[in-house]
Image 1 (cartoon, one colour):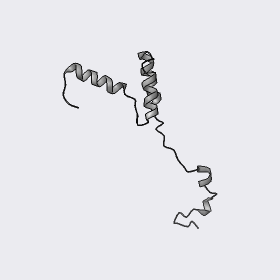
Image 2 (cartoon, one colour):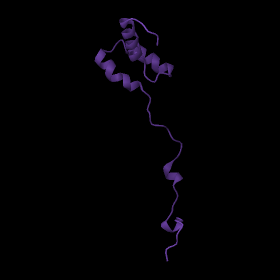
Image 3 (tube, rainbow, N blue to C red):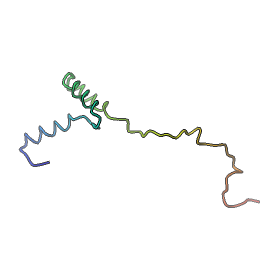
Image 4 (tube, rainbow, N blue to C red):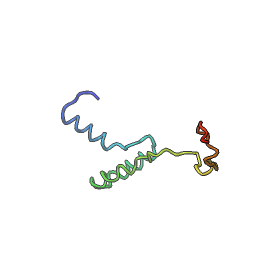
Length: 82
């Protein structure tokens, strides 16, 4: 970011704060740009995070299917106990 006057820097900081977080999705950005001017500032602050994508990764592994039956006798611990 280039150096600007104090007011210009504050204005740019506000614009960056108002930008849609996680905004690579054009539909999400369009909805936020439409709704944001309608909302009062307190609701803007509260709802801005609602537009963030879910940070938990999706998995294609089914844990129930992936886990097979096993017993302690099936596990090789490397040392046989007499």
